[in-house]
Length: 316
Ligand code: RI2
Image 1 (cartoon, rainbow, N blue to C red):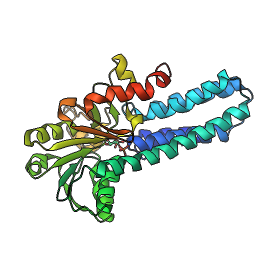
Image 2 (cartoon, helix red, strand yellow; image 1 turned 135 degrees about the vertical axis):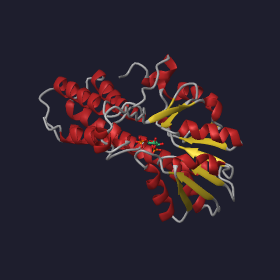
Image 3 (cartoon, rainbow, N blue to C red; image 1 turned 180 degrees about the vertical axis):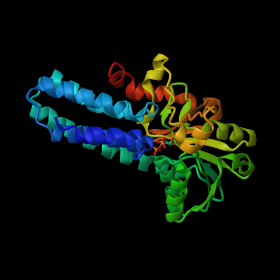
Image 4 (tube, protein in one colour; image 1 turned 45 degrees about the vertical axis):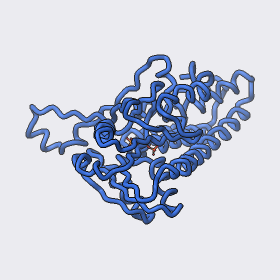
């Protein structure tokens, strides 16, 4: 069995050569498509068990961004439906190809739609602060800029992996007015900030947002200065299992992302903690911008029920 696309995508997601909640979802779906197309299966049974094993492997690459299991489950659900219809192996693989292409296209379209919806929330003269690197956020800022609005952006560095540099670089190349600031400088600049705009790795049924570590501190400071706090997320980042009371697992990454190996060796009694994500409670969030519309966090559970309750629960 040629597992190449699945194994290499698993590793690229795990060590964050492919990162960002939307990107990892699309990468996993493309890996599953390639896996189906590039292998010969002796029976439908073999196909299904191998496909589900590949899906489980991909889902295990990173635990927090729910976009990853949601995207993989979307493909596996199509395989299950095909099995239930007793389709031939060739038909099933054909269906999976279509489903994977459809997911990737609709994911890209959703980000663009969020850009257009969110751009309306940026006012002329605003100062906007963002954290980490989110395609949904850069889509909004870019759309507002292309609409001719003049505004200033502060991008936090986002230690320990400095994804804020990606954001600052992308926005500057697109002609936006952007300043990179240390994470620890957020409170200094927040007095000038009109709106905070962040992405999401997962959104819980109560409207809490799981995003890059540091997001919840920024929300607290935004609350203090009454800056608006917006979240931009495609609906495949909704965590349906939180409707059943399940918690979103927070990823803890290597201490060597925080300090060099030699330093830790010389200071071996020091414990280094590196949680990747934190949880911003709904009370600190004004609006969640999705491709299906803009919701207060308290409205998210209704969107979740409308979109996913039946198709997603019970899969996995
Ligand atoms: P988009 C990222 O996680 C950040 O937390 C970002 O806010 C989120 O994914 C959403 O990104 P990481 O992969 O899907 O850098 O909006 O840990 O691009």
